[in-house]
Length: 439
Ligand SMILES: Cc1cc2nc3c(=O)[nH]c(=O)nc-3n(C[C@H](O)[C@H](O)[C@H](O)COP(=O)(O)OP(=O)(O)OC[C@H]3O[C@@H](n4cnc5c(N)ncnc54)[C@H](O)[C@@H]3O)c2cc1C
Image (cartoon, rainbow, N blue to C red; front, side):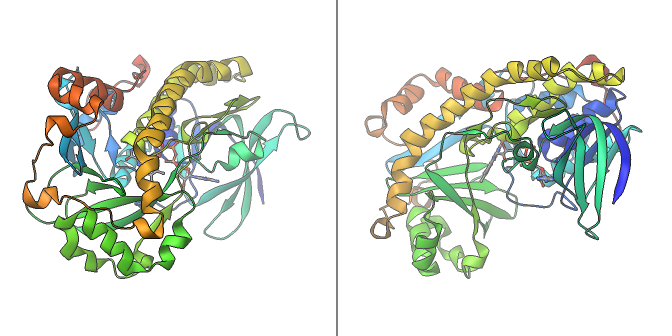
């Protein structure tokens, strides 16, 4: 076991929160080490959205040109395809600022860019294959957190890394939170997600497609030559639905998205379909002495509206702005300063989670309950994209909120703003700003 290694700011987890935090801390001149348990960022379970407020942040960080060079698609509006037709819910062209869209970028490309940029800073270290397995305490089990124990997954060796401040960015199953005895308040979620790919062909719609019927709910994310598909199932119904067999699943999908029916043969077995466990929760306390939690470790987000990455990034920016000056001067960061991060980020998080809970209850519970019952497997679908890709629903068939959005298109700017910018966008502090860092 290696002991007595030290860093100033120890970040656990190299997701959006951890890497953005690492980059900003390094630009502040703080010695920062990010421990990431995987060897790379190549995992397809993450969301692909980079929101307008994160695009503004990338401009401020001077990373706009490099980001623009990544393969991406711009989502300029969000539509929902109901049985009665297509309805527009958000129009990003009404957003303020230069970025009037959400960029759909494979998250590994985005994270590679941030990691790459951070590694140009001398005070930044990213250790891959480093899985945190416990916390170090100054003295006794309830005293100040003084760093972590981690396992090198390449050879199984164990190490200790001490730090002035440890920040848990290790996501929904945070080991750091559990080791600190912090248990989140769970709001439950009515659904889990089946995650799989389907080929994408010329002439298919672009961007994101949300497909809702009275008995099924799916989202298709355009990743260029394939669709990353998410099919929502009732919470805990994975085993039952798998027992129905892959043909039954293909039949559900064919009814839901008939224009993809011929490509469903590419799902050869349930080995091609991954289960993603959806959680929605929030820690009551985001900090104890020596330790702060941010991102999903502090508040696990549902995939609804695809806003978790944006919130995680905003948490990271606020954390760096509030804590980097104290860390740079080498002092211990008092618990009151850690609590200031929670105070700043709590309300935007709570607001967004309240919206997600509402969507769970109003939009999702019904369809997934039907989808998860063996008899309700194939609710009729109109096949709209087959017949009429742009087919707008008749006004009188739409539920009231969607009718209002249709009648007063200016209102479509409100959901656009909520999703693409969020309630409290954070901006890069002056010391982190660059003009086109490596353009
Ligand atoms: C099915 C699904 C789809 C989603 N789609 C979207 C979307 O489209 N858009 C969106 O904005 N949000 C989406 N979300 C939410 C989003 O994924 C999260 O809110 C966001 O990833 C949180 O970022 P994070 O950095 O806090 O945590 P994560 O992205 O979870 O990153 C945590 C990192 O910590 C590492 N780690 C974990 N444990 C350890 C350990 N012990 N030691 C070291 N490293 C560790 C992990 O490997 C990972 O790299 C989705 C969520 C789900 C469940």
